[in-house]
Structures are given as structure tokens and as C-alpha cells.
Image (cartoon, rainbow, N blue to C red; front, side, top):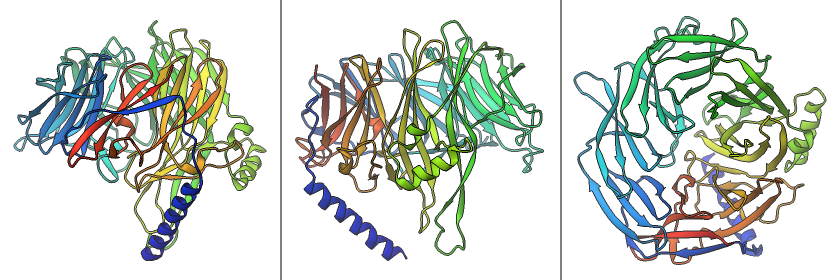
Length: 540
């Protein structure tokens, strides 16, 4: 079986290469590409890149138990400094994030005697220096994974020990973790979570504690956690036994206030919460008329097919709530069938039309990946199809599909909606899949790697898939005008043909926003064991 699959895969690749050679692609004249001076390579599976001020960028690379911090000049693309820190010891990276003018390297370490895990952070300043360690919180020995996330530095997925998020105004950092089950039976288990709220500017702990949920794990569908600028933690949940949405507010003294949220019965997978300047909460989420069951290919040695749940998204619901859960505004925007059918094959269109007759046509597995609040009160919501399947032969395949981009006015009314075609898949987690966005010139851009066959795609054609497992791909950008929603597609370059570069291990998170309308990414220079920065600039 595996040899047959390998043969088919090779034939597919050869066919794609042949097609690519016969299909010249016109590159966008809107971007210029330049390569900077080379510098010695620091080999690492874990790399993180950030821009601090328009002039400088920082790269953080883990090398064994050491951490290397590099500083770059964004104009000359040259490396200015490099410092290796060997005083951290054995650790697990939990998150590397930027907050204001600092970068935080957040990691954990388990005490061998107490078996307790402690969460630490080291700040990196704009001089490229790693500052002394700060302790964020100590957790119980019986904590468990809070979820799973794709990690691009390793194959597959890794468990999330801590969920680490920021308040909308970036003044607070929320750390959340989960304690072991009291019972293996969900209807009898009451989940317990630990929380720590950290001041984002100083890394000083504001408060921490653990709390047991008031309903069973089976009864609660936790849709969103968020910390607000006053240090309260908000949980928006659905309690199935009483068929009620609730806003639970956890205060610094660990008291819990519960408020009913009068939302009509909708199937909602998750919400994204943003705190507005007036202290009210903007909650956005996709709704569905039901859950689909997808039958994926069987594993070798197993009989039958594996079943996967798929959220069939029918549209967007957006709520404006007071901190106590009172609804100030409520808006639903259902996807029109013409939008759902765009860039789909005939079989999918026919199926969608049949489902539309009973009100169930939708877009499967849509996740909100970015919410942009604009100063005029409008908002842009970007959704992406994301799902995992078990293909024939076992293993996992990770899929990142079409984009849905919506703009809403300050009152939540829909100004425009666009579907942008994309098909990406790979076997190593997120890897080089999904998108990276940046804004400039009254528009915002979504960067991704695409298949050359899609260079001149029409709205009536389903896109060919880009595979992340073989490198290469065309760096592509969708430009969306923020006012009108008009879309342009720009083919920027083939990553197998970057000037002065032998290869780029493309990862969206490795793209550095430098100056307005300019971004940079690290590549492998043609010289042995050397790197160089590549800059992409949008022309005026």
C-alpha cells in the first residue's frame, strides 16, 4: 500500500513540475525583492522573529538548552549583534510573544522533588539583550494538557500546557492551565482551572489562583476566555442542561460572578472576545445549523473508516455586551449561497445547492484567525478553513483552505464580504501553511504559499492544492481594499528562485513586519552554513 501511494505521489509531483515549467507566471510589479549581506548560520528548530521599532528586528533561536538572541538592522538587512545565553537550563518553550517594546521568552521547568511545574519569562529589549528571569506562576503537580496545537518546528502537534493570551489593550497577560480530572466520567467531572494575571509592562504578577467550574465538564461548552484591562477574567460558556449562555467573571479575589446572556439557540464552536475602549465586550463567532460527520480514509490494518466532526459554518454572529453579559447589540450575517459556491467543484456546488434548500448550506471548518479593530469603529474579520484528517496509510494531514473576509461598520452591519480561494496541506502541523497579514496604503495583505497552477485562477475554478511537504511554492498575496473590499492577487516570487538564496524554510510566523509596506524573512545563502535576510517591499 505505502509503495503504491509513494509512486502515485511521485507521479503527482512530476506532473506538477512539468505543468509549472509549461506555465509561465507573471510576477507582480508591485513588489521588489532584495537580499542582504550573509552572516554565520545558527542552526535551530525553534526560531522566532520580531520587529522592535521600525529600525531593528530581533531573532530568538533555541540551541539545545541555550538561547541565541540576534539583532538586525531593517534598512541594511545586516546582523548587528548576537548573544548566546546558557543560564536557562533544560526547559520547555511555552510561548514567545511581543508586548509593546519588549519580547517575552516564556518557558516552564519541572522541579524534580516537588514535581511542580513553574512558568518563567525572560524579556528581550530593543538592544537585543535578554533580561533577568521573572517567575510568572507555579502550578500543581497534577496539571494536564489544556489542548493541542500544531507546532511548525516539529512534526505533528504538541500539547498546550498553558494558554497565554493578552488583553485587547495589551496591558495584561492571562495564563490559564488545567488540573487533572476528578472523575473520568465527564458528567461527574467538574473541571478546575488555574489562572494568573500578569502586568504586561513589568511581568509582575497581579493575582493568581485556581477555581472549580460550577457545572460538569459534559454540561459546559467553554466558548471563550479573555482578560480585561481591570484584571478580571471573562468566560463565555454554554450550559446545556439549562440551555443557557452565561458570562462568568472571575475577580482577583477568586470570587465568581455569573450572568445570563440572552442569545438565541445557535450552534457556536467558539467566540473571540475583544474589549472596546468603553469597557464593553465585542464577541464574534461563527454559527452553524449543525455538525457534519466526515468519513476519512481507513488506516492500514484497520477495518472501516475514521469519523471526524466538521463544523458546518453558516455565518457570523457578533454581539456587543456589557461586562456583566447584557446584550447591547446583536447581529447575524448568513453566508449567501453564491459566496459558498465560489471556487468549488461541480460536485460540491450541487451538494451545497441541495443543502441550501433546507437551510444548511455552509462552509466547513471555518476558524476566526484575525480580528482588526479600525480607529473609525469598523472591524475586519478574517476566517480560514482549518482541519485535520487521517488519510489512507495512517498519520495526519493538516489542511488550511479558503479565506472569508468580512468588514462590519461600527453598528455591526455588514459592509462587504469576500471569499478568497486557497488550498494548502501538509503532514507537519502548520509548517509553512496558513497566512500572514500586514496593513498598508488603505489595504491589508494576506501572504501565503500557493501552487503555481493557481496563478490565473478564475472565480469558477477550484484551486489546486499546494503541498507543504516538498518545499518551494509561490509566495502570493491577496490585497484587499479596506474601503471597497476590492481584491487583487499578486504573485510575488517562486521560493526556489530567490536572488542570492539557496533556500528559505518558509514559515508565516517567521515573516518580520519592518517598515510600513515592507517585510523581511531569513533565508539560507548560497555560501556554506550562512544566512541572509530577504526583504520584500511594496512599491509606492
